Length: 338
Image (cartoon, rainbow, N blue to C red; front, side, top):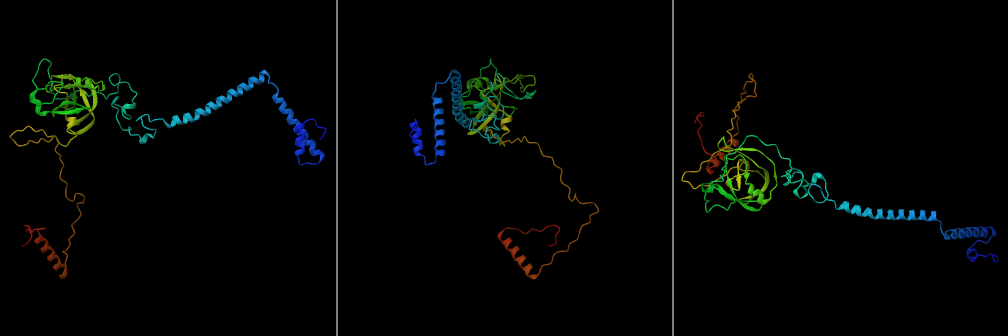
């Protein structure tokens, strides 16, 4: 060991526990080879080696960037919201907007706040018009100005004072408007000025509406839906037909009135109330007795049951008690004896 030039190899050999010459030579060769390998790494790299290392470093940076993007993508997935209701991501069967009707495009399955459709005025899918839809309406003429009743609610359209007892004040999307309860109108209507003032979305509809006179017909301007507050009760998604020249802001017809069991209008007359039932009379033929029996089925004679003295005494005492308490009463049938 004294002849070794490398101080590092000499120190490692002195630290080794091997005592034979062969083991020391093997250790010396391994240490010398390792030292030469280290020296080759310290030599300046050539141009092609530099390019390769640069590519490796760039690849490593891309891997690190992708590794950083994966948590961000996972975080973004956690923050995704439902396409139909706007809430946190959930299954379609549990979505609250599954059966809802959009107030913007009138389509079923999503809320208006997440609707991506164009305004319903420009393009919308509306149900086909029903030709010949009849409605008996009170339409105001543009050249006729009628004084309003001072007790009637404020309205943007003039209406005759004779209708004041059938005109009430309702809330349409949070705004107070005048409403006519018309039992002769088949559908409910709204004035175009109310639609414009409230910014309601409408869908196109050229439905002809017939007046009380068969020769008078008015074409509707469209359809819309709104929320009504009538006498403290909220009605959502009420369908209204936009009709010009109405005498009031809103007309509630039979489609709205049919939601209730009955509708009472108080006029203050002297005669007793007049009730008109719009339901059809149910015509049912009376059932036949023993219709399920065949013609050759004879009756069976059964003798009267005989009770013991104790049972008869108990029955008589119970019957007398029920008679005294007024639960039952004594009645003589015509076909019985005494």
